[in-house]
Length: 116
Image 1: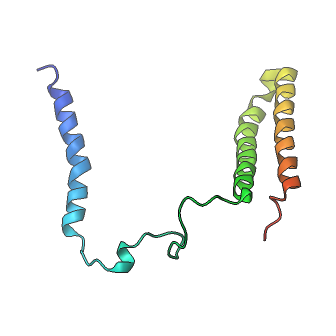
Image 2 (image 1 turned 135 degrees about the horizontal axis):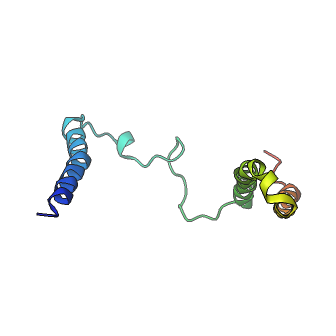
Image 3 (image 1 turned 90 degrees about the horizontal axis):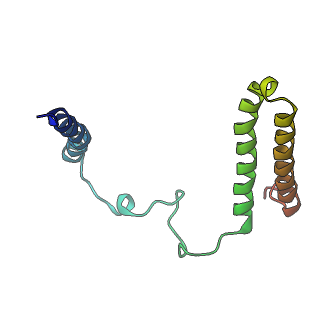
């Protein structure tokens, strides 16, 4: 009897998870056509094998995003606690910004900032 609330909670969770899916499947219109059943990839049909190598610029743009995303994610909390962490925290953030700057310069030299 001590596990009765857990069992009720599990049953309610399954009902809340399964009933909307089942209702959607039952109520939704089912009119399949080739366009609906085809694989959707960026608005046009796939034209090559999925295992083709990517251009290196794709990875450079991803690295660029990570550089700016990390910088933004760490600068705000650092700025809030700057008074409390003192010069050691300031130096640590300087090292962090320096490493991000090295990554940014690498991106710039590789031409990731030049859009074609």
